[in-house]
Amino acid sequence: MEKKQFQAESKRLLEMMINSIYTKKEIFLRELISNASDAIDKMYYKTLTDESLSFDRDQYYIKIIPNKENRTLTVMDTGIGMTKEEMETNLGTIAKSGSLSFKKEHEMKDGFDIIGQFGVGFYAAFMVSEIVTVKSKAFGENQGYEWQSEGTDGYTISECEKDEVGTEVILKLKENTEDDNFDEFLDEWRLKEIVKKYSDFIRYPIKMDVTKHKPKEEGSDEFIDYKEEEVINSMVPIWRKNKNELTDEDYVNFYNEKRYGFDKPLKHIHLTVDGTVRYNAILYIPESAPYDYYTPEYEKGLELYSNGVLIMGKSPDLLPDYFSFVKGMVDSEDLSLNISREMLQQDRQLKFIAKNIKNKIKRELELMLKNEREKYESFYNAFGRQLKFGVYSDFGANKDLLQDLLLFYSSKEKKLVTLDEYVSRMTDEQKYIYYATGDSIERIEKLPQTELVAEKGYEILYLTEDIDEFAIKMLGNYKEKEFRSVSSDDLGINSEEKTEDQETKEETKQLFTSMKEILGDKVKSVKASKRLKSHPVCFSTEGDITIEMEKVINSMPNNQQVKAEKVLEINPNHEIFQSLKKAFEADKEKFALYTKILYNQALLIEGLQVEDPVEFTNDMCKVMV
Ligand SMILES: Nc1ncnc2c1ncn2[C@@H]1O[C@H](COP(=O)(O)OP(=O)(O)OP(=O)(O)O)[C@@H](O)[C@H]1O
Image (tube, rainbow, N blue to C red; front, side, top):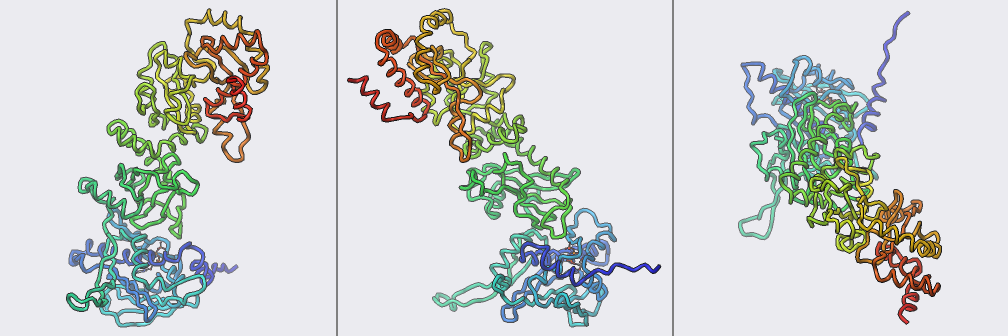
């Protein structure tokens, strides 16, 4: 039986190509410039392998020529050009990449940046053009040829006049429609912008005649336009330069040019990796958080380049969420791109790079913490919250990686300290790492619950952000030392007054039971406090949920209401206790009044709302009169 070949439905394929591969029309320019760069690279390769030839850099360039009158945009190059046959095979066949064949044929390895590989990029030109004309003269040939096509209807090839070796791709732009404005591709400013965005680091000059103004005559107020040829790309990517040649200023300039942020970066990290996956990266730790940083609108990610050509403006997979503040770029020649170059075909290389980058950022932050404490603190003020989120999220999967980057304010040092510094100052008898929570340092300083721990001389970490206690709970312990809230029922401190406490407990058992009855479900229990020294009353909590956590969880939208198990602690050594006792024995009404007032005071100390403020103020008045 006769075996029939599958016929590629070229027309349909081309239509598909033109309309569905790329998400942005402006990409066509990137593709044509990449082709031009490939063509010059091939020429360069020829001169390297043929001793009779020399490569004079000045002769090799790409030029973009917008022509508003004719509605054409030309991309010309002085590269290797195409013969008639090459036009036929490379431009006449979709998915035929002359560049890939060239690379394979010549076993080109490092040092060349051949970009083309799929044989489709050229057709992106039809996204914006009615007619595409390619005039080319191949190196070593005398005759030039012209290829022309209106898209899906096929193409023609004819002889043409062309003096210089190289190629001109002339696009007759489509008329504007309601949705698309093709005029923008004739606008010098817009063209410059697109070149900067995608092709800034093409290593040959991309030139354009740029309109400028000058006074008609010297000193005149009247201005006239004139054109001046400018190179509009930077050519040498900073990341390919040797680190030793670059100054801090160069890195800051790059940060600003790329608009990674409006601040001055705190630190840059320049990586040149030559391992299993080769890549260069420049990463920045910004000084301040962008206004939308802690909102869902913030998009993390690094710019991803393949061989100096921008593939993705923000590749989120390159950064873990907890380092989402990092800005910068990665360039690798080892990525397997998909056909539109907008995605990667497989992410093995990307994962590898992401892992390396993550470790590198962590290392840099550790070094900053160790050697540039002030800088680190300023970083931490901006992004510490994100690190704490990182500890808490993913069920604590990254807590080990992040715990040494955390800082908390210390009651003793009166500044931010690391967990390691805290633990190194712990005495043998101190069982736990103590912490207290509250809205601000000033507020925590005044918390009655801290009294016993502070009197013992133990350091207390002050947790002032809503995420803090969640992160601490997720950590559970640090260097085998458990964290303990100063409000927790067991502080692990053996109080000397233990026996006396016991007596007190017996003597006042009924009193506390009665208080609990008055307060009902509002508290888990009422007891004599061991932690209070000078203050009359406070709350402590039993169980996992603390009062601070109750506040945070209940303030979240759509969240179920949780309740901390509050224990009302009364200081038996405070004068108020005597008043309570007296009232308990002689005046039950007064006793109930005192109980309610003390309960409300404990609420206020915690920054919680008094359930009935009117009743509370009336109660206070009753005491006064
Ligand atoms: N300016 C040019 N000078 C010389 N040859 C060119 C030029 N533009 C295109 N070609 C040839 O046409 C081929 C097809 O180009 P096309 O852009 O469609 O694919 P590609 O660049 O090979 O691959 P990719 O789709 O990955 O960009 C190229 O491989 C190259 O051989």
